Length: 275
Image 1 (cartoon, rainbow, N blue to C red):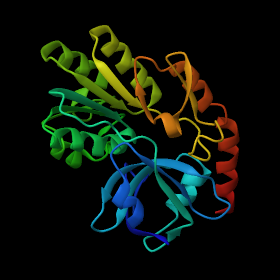
Image 2: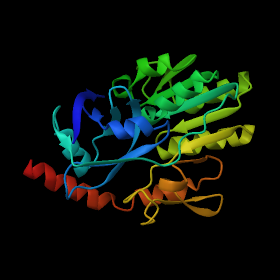
Image 3: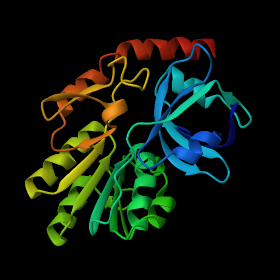
C-alpha cells in the first residue's frame, strides 16, 4: 500500500532517502509535520519528519540515518517494497510568515527536516540565510536543494573538508553580529540545538527547534515523547515537534534519548547476525 518509488543512498550509505506513495498524506502534509512508519506488522513505530511532499505525484519523502535495528531493516527495502503502515501527517505544522531576515541552521539528518521549512520561509518573502553542518563533506546531505531554498548558504564541516572549518555556531555568531535577524530555526543533534539556542538567547533572537524524543503512538496517549519546555511537560507528538528553543530542557532530553542505548545496540547486533 505504501510503496517505495524512489530510493537513494546518501552520506556513504549511512543515510537513506525513500520516496513513498502516500497520496492522502501528501495532500494534507505541511512543513514541520511528521509521519510514523512501520516496515511490517510487528515492527517498531518510527517517527520521521517529511523532507519533501509532492501532492501531484501523491508521494512523501523521508530521510533517515541507519542507527538501529528498525532503520537497518528499513535500509534493506528496495524500490517496489511496501511499508506496512505510514501514519500522518502528525504534529503541528511550522508557522510560516514573513519575518524579514531569518536564519535556518541544520545538522545531520536534521537538514532533511529543515528543507521544507526553509523553502516555505523563502517562498513567503523572507531573506533566508542557511547554515549547514556535518562531520565531513561526505556526510553532508541535500546541499543542492538547500541552496535553492536559501538566499545565502554556508557550509561547515568539523574536519574542514568543505566550507568553514568548524561548527555552525561559529558562522551563526558572525551572521547575528552583522544582520538584524528576526528568527532562527535550528534542527539537528541535541547539542547543536542547545548551543544555537544559548547564542540566540543572549542576542534576544526568537528561536525554534524541532525535538526528536522517543515516541510510540504519536497521538499523545502514551506519554513517551514528553519533554520539559519552560518548566512544563509537553508531548512532542501533539504539542510539537517544534518548541521555543530558549525554554527546552536539553539535558533532560539528552538523558531520555540515551535511556535505551544498550538495548538498541544489542537488538541491532542480533539483527545483523541473522541478516
